[in-house]
Amino acid sequence: FSCTPATAAAELPCAREILSTLARRAYRRPATDADVQTLIDFYEVGRREGSFDQGIGLALERLLADPDFLYRIERDPVDAAPVTAYPVGDVELASRLSFFLWSSIPDDELLAHAERGTLSDPDVLEQQVRRLLADPRATALVENFAGQWLHLRNMKSVYPDPLEFPEFDENLREAYQTETELFIDTLLREDQSILELLSANYTFVNERLARHYGIPDVYGSRFRKVTFDRGEHAGLLSHGSLMTVTSYPNRTSPVLRGKWVLENLLGAPPPEPPPDVPTLEEKNEDGEPLSMREAMVMHRENPACAVCHAPMDPIGFALENYNAIGQWRPVSEAGTPIDASGTLPDGAEFEGPSGLRDLLLDRPDDFVGTVTEKLMMYALGRGLEYYDAPTVRKIVRDAAGEEYRWSAIILGIVKSTAFQMRRSDS
Image (cartoon, rainbow, N blue to C red; front, side, top):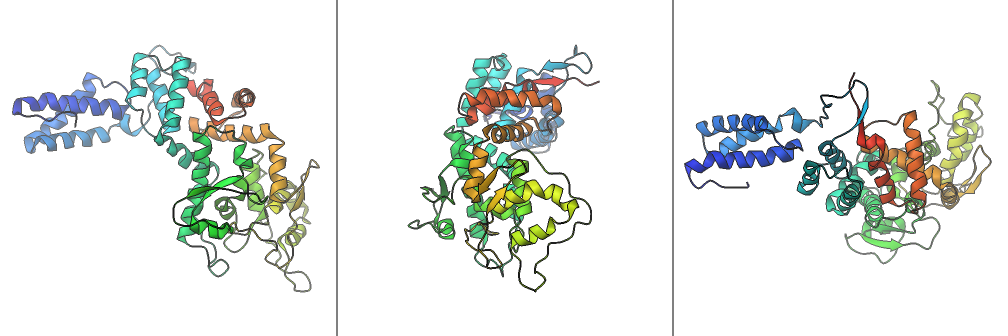
């Protein structure tokens, strides 16, 4: 607490100081006299029934049940015209910013700028964005955004078949998630280009994960940065976490992986599949096991299936060298050499993970645009509409001059009309 009463007469002033301070932080705005008096009323009930601490405790229960604490409420100005866009106030802007970058309430410095009305100044706003990004609390952006965007949080609910993959255990599950989070956190804190998500020739491993990847001379549980000189390891497309969440328990899935890349890296999700899609054949007419590519070729002979699979399957095939738990392999489940070549409907050809990676890097605006869309959706807490498209294009265009650095994308979102304005109710 901010004070401790030494006498009975000092208790009420001390309670008012404590509750005023807490209300300002909890409500993320200056606490009004009415706010504080409501809490004092609860304090006095608790104090009569027990001690000073019990009084404060009851007041805290009331504070934590208040809608202004539980919800991010943005009230229209009294003079706002119906269904009209207007700039949010500095106090509301502070909450938008802190929940975007920290998933938490504004700290004293940010709230002080908001209360003085200086946060909306472009220079002050940029300084605060950079300060929040440099703070350890920005780890929440990595965990929550990456968890949603990359489906990384699904690592907690995948269970590879123990008969097919007996080496998969809880230690590997945790290591996979840590690897991807540390990788993205490093790119964010070092303000690297978003393209490094695809091109980086390094990752973070401990002994358990290094052994799984076949990386020598790594010992202990501590994660450390390692670099690769082999083409199969580079960027997110080689992370075991992402290969695992896009596989079935007992085998890989070019469809799931291709769909995941289209949706999350290229922003071009395929249409929904038709009803009653037939399952994949596992053996040919002679009863011999089919490779995944052979099974998918047979599946695409159905015209209803071919339309959706034409853009998905080639991308998924490029990642077939990674098995269902992200280990590199030269042969498929059927024992045949893996054919990881692919051709997109537009004629673009590629070979394996490195070829797919190069294809994505050759289209930087598509990839960065998709990351920007996903990050903007996260920041706004809503899906994007057609009228948001010009804003996304401008952010990407402006960021190109700064090598698509994370800070350029994040500042572009924070300074955008969508982030700084609100439409009044009807």
